[in-house]
Length: 90
Image (cartoon, rainbow, N blue to C red; front, side, top):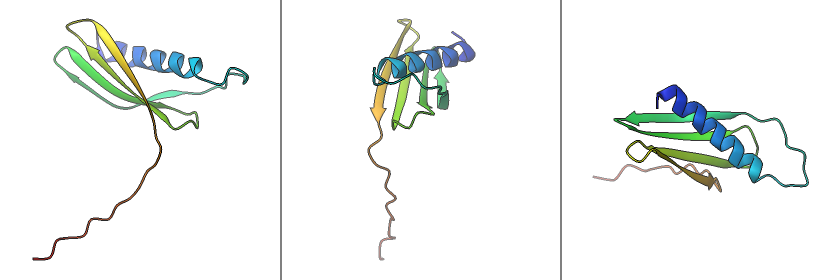
């Protein structure tokens, strides 16, 4: 599978997952799926994706090229902290 095919497949899988997990009483909103980061090593690929929905979700998709399988992990962002690191005293 080429990089372009993998990226398009990832976007499709994330869109399907997001729609499947939306509140069923709401109308499905228009939203985009975008790739934050992607890497290919030999026959394996990994991509981190998110959407324009304000649900705090992000997704990790990993392709096992030997088994021809894609694994989808869905995560919810709970917090983003900035932690200052003080230099150690000598």
